[in-house]
Length: 248
Image (tube, rainbow, N blue to C red; front, top):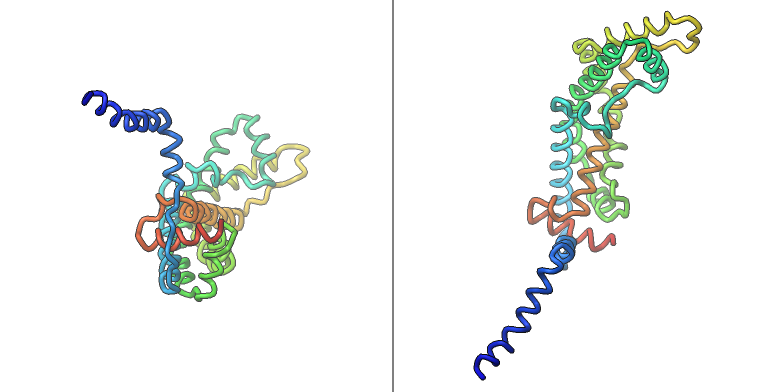
């Protein structure tokens, strides 16, 4: 009789454990997406939280993109031939000039990586200049890239001014100017070639470097807005947990 009583007591536990173990993936996924109820952060916490998140995101983005292969190794932002030169690239590759074309692409990306290292101080200054209204608008926006759009509005001109001389020098140092000029010369010599290549790369590489930088910052912003695992401090967890609930 005692044995039956013990079995009767343990049976619900056994059923519960068995049920959980049969569906671990679903339960784990549900737990991962569960956001506990957050208390309302103060204005100071919201200001500090967003600034902390932006400092974290921009620092990570600029560090990654300014490293070796930061652009070249990322298919989403890797610099290719300028659109007006892509027909020329195809023609030259057919003529066996693959190495020259590859050298151009690699050197364009090296120049962008060099330029990305100049971005961090510009973002730091932009973050410091944010008003409480800016921060509230960004945090509670339904747009998942609201902070990135703020940076685009407030830093693009400065980034262009800072990047362009670095790009110009880097293009020369890594051989891009030489390779691209050589490629343009080879293509422009081909008979019946009407669309000549402009060998000036500075504007193209500068703009693509800035585009790639904002692309990475937008990724970091989305991560912290949508995933608890990217909120590395209690403050970020409180502020963005609250924001996640408010903007659902």
